[in-house]
Amino acid sequence: MLHENYLKSMFLAVLLVFSITSVAHADYPADALDKKIIIQLLKDQKFDHLDKVLTRLQTRYEQGHTDELEVAHAFRAFANSDPELDERLKTWLMQKPDSFAAHLAVAEYNQGIGWHARGTRWSKDTEQKQFAKMQAYFRVAAENYTQASQLNPKLTLAYRGMIRLSYALGGQELAKQVMQKGLQIDPASYLIHYQYMWSLQPKWGGSIVEMKKHLETVRQYYSTNPRLRNLEAFPDYVLADEFPWHECKKATPHFNRALGKGDLPYVYIERGESHRCVKSNKAAISDYTKAIVLQPQSPGYLQSRGYMYYQMKEYQKALKDLDEAIELDRMHPKALLTRGRVYYQLKKPDDALKDLNDALSYGSQNKKTHIYLGYVYYYQKKNYVMAVRHLREAIVLGENNPSTHYLLTAALWHERDCDFVETASDFVQLCANNRKCKNENVEWAGKSVDHAVAKGICSQKSKN
View (tube, rainbow, N blue to C red):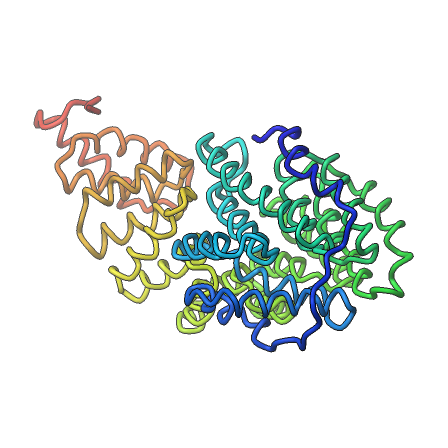
């Protein structure tokens, strides 16, 4: 991971900036609240119009005429993994090197890609090359957040982004320093307080005690910015988040208490997951929808609801959400995986393969993606070589479900590959105390191995 000193050097200029730049007043443009329009302006290289739209929005926030979250919503459009945007952003920055909006857009894009490159697995299960890719993107993001905040020191979004980089890379103290500097601009900034509270979660090195201590300093601003009251939800959310998936029932009361104290979209998403865990499908859909209403055009939230519809076998509703999520974030790994699974169920193997392979584009390794690639190749394309490749990769990534080992065995058997002897043995062993295994599959595996060995077709240990 990046050394904390590196980030300190990147942000040094920010922490030393005291002058305020001025920008002209203009009416707020309605199209700034539609992420798709913003991205289309970028793709069409309408850089003058982009600067005008985004500068107006930021100016109106600085003058107290619009909401800080509207500015954040507009710039979140650039947290988009569409590869086409990379060159467009570079061109915008080259043509307008003094545009704070261009620098902030580049930072948001690279931070988003960095998270995709890292993947969603636990740190202990994440390959070093994935961390290296994340760090490379984060370096670019850090440089551009710094430059953006120098060009416009009132840019609270830049501080919000830098706090996120700081705690993600292990710099809890640096996150605090950036937060304190950002609050000199706007002591009641919801974005800065929210991101700092997020950084204080135990999984990032913080604690509930530190959260409560920060809340004590925030309460003085509730009358100035009532939205800050929502941050009271954080301590109960953390208590809920500590329960593992198989104890989801225990988490729900804590989510309820959290949402009784504040309307945080992500907490609705997490309570929705808890409802999904206990098969309360309608309650889950209700919570996902509340989160989407609070934070529209969120690819992650649309993916969550789309996945719930997929689980409910309401495939057209799932596709509607997933299509929207992918339009907003072209290479969103989870959305692509889920839509690939929907296409598999709809018996559209070519569409499924495209989405599932795209889900791996930024190196985000997910065993489920490889499992479903195995399913499509085995059952729908009858391509057993490719099925073997992906099922093996899923097992390397930690998949230990007997059904995956069974399918790998069957694919190897179709290819007359004697490696099936070893995989069949693994499958039988996994099924020793597993009632979910089908007896006929276990019997087939055992008999196939016995036949191949008895006839001299394969040896007992035949892995090449």
